[in-house]
Length: 577
Image: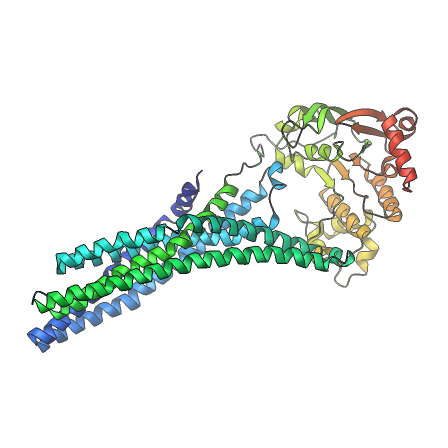
C-alpha cells in the first residue's frame, strides 16, 4: 500500500472519533468567526444608534456564546483530541512492532536497530501530528480563512478582492522553500536514525570500548554524527525563519494597505466604524491562519517523510508462517538436504548443490573455512530463509510445507553470540513458555552445569542478571543459552560456533555437555575449532558450498585435503585440536 493508503487505513480504525472531531472543530471555528461580527455590531450600536438596551442584549449573547465555546465545546474537543492522538499512535506502533517481529530473514540484516526505534517513536508521532494537527487543525484554519474572506466580501467588495489577492502571494512565497525543506528533513531523519543505532551499539558494548581504549574514537564518531545533525537542524531552522519572516513582511505590508483603504471608505461615508473594526479583525484572521498554515507546511513536509519511512516498514513482506498446514510433531528428527542451492545476494550462491543426510538421533559436525556456508545450514534449517532450489526435508517432509510455528518450536539453535535480557534469570530461561515450572528450569540448569551457581544467587531464579548479564562470565552466559534451549526441549538442536569465544576449559565443559544432550536428539554442531566436533558421529567438510567429505574425524584426517589443511592450520596456530 502507498503511504496515503496506510494513513486512511489507520484513520478508518478511528472513523467515529474523527467524525466527532470534525463536528466539534466545525462548531468551535464557526463560533470563533462570530466574535468579530458581534464586536462590530456592538460598536455600531454604541456609536451610531446609542441604544443601551440593544447593546446590553448583544453583550449577553456574546457572553453566552463565549461560555458555551470555552466550557462545553473546548472540553469536548480536548477529550476527543486526547482519545484520537493516543489511540492513533498506539495502532501505528502496534502494527510496526508486529511487522518487525514478522520480517523476513533477508530484511533483518538490512535495518539499523536505532533507525527502527526512531521510526517507531519519532516517525509514528509525526504521523499523528500530520493527521491531527495538519488535518483537523488545517481544516479549522481553512474554515477560518474561507468565512473570513466571505465576511470581507459581505462588508465591501473591494475588501474581499484585496484579501483574495493576498492569499496567492503568501502561498507563492512559501512554495519557494518547499523542496529544500523536504530534502533537509529526509536527510535529517536518516542521520538521526544512524546516530540512534550508533548510540545503541556503544551502550551495549561499553566494556569492549574500555578494553580497546577506544573512547576517543567513539567520541569522535559521535561528534561527527551530531555535527552533521546540527548542520541539518541549522539549515532547517534557517528555512523556517526565512519563510516566517517573508510571510510576516507580506502580512504587515498588506495590513497597512488595508488601513489605507478603510480610511478612504470611512472618509467617504461608505463604511461605519464598527465595520472597519470587524473587517480589520477578519483580515487579520485570514492572514494569521493562512500564515499559520504556511508555517506548518514545513513541518508537514517533514511529517510526510516520516510517513514514508513508516510505510516502508509496513510494506515489507512478512514471513509465511504457513498456518494452513497443521502442526506436525517431529518424531524422528531425520534431516536431509537435497541438491540445495541458496544465496543471500542474487547471483552469488553460498550453497551450490549441497547434499547432506543426518540420521535420527545422530550428532554430526560441520567444518570449513569462513564463507564456506556453515552458518547458512542452520539458517535454512530454522527456515529464516527459503532455499532457492532443491529440497530441505525433516522426517521426509519439505520444511516449506510445514507450519512455521510448529517447526521452530521443535528446532533449537545456540549461537556464538550470547543473547541475554535485562531481566531475571527465570525470564531469560523461559522467554517463551514454562515460566512457572521451577522443576523444569532447575533441571535445565543442572544439565548446563549452572545449578550450583544459581544456588549462590540471593533471589534464585528471580535474580536480576542486569544489562546483557554483565556479571556472568562468557562460559556461564553460553551455558545459560544452552539451558534456555533445553527448556524449549527441541527435537533437533544446532550449535552454531557456540564455543568459538570460549577458553579451552569452558569449551571442554560444553563439549562434554553436548555429548549428554545428544540422547534422543538430532544434533548439528557447526564449528571452526575441529576439537569441538572431532568426537561427532560424522563430520561434513564444506568447500565452496558443497560437501567435499563426510566421515569420521580419523578418516577425514587421512583422506580429505581440506580437513587436513584445517587441522594443520590450527596446530600451527596453537589451537587445541
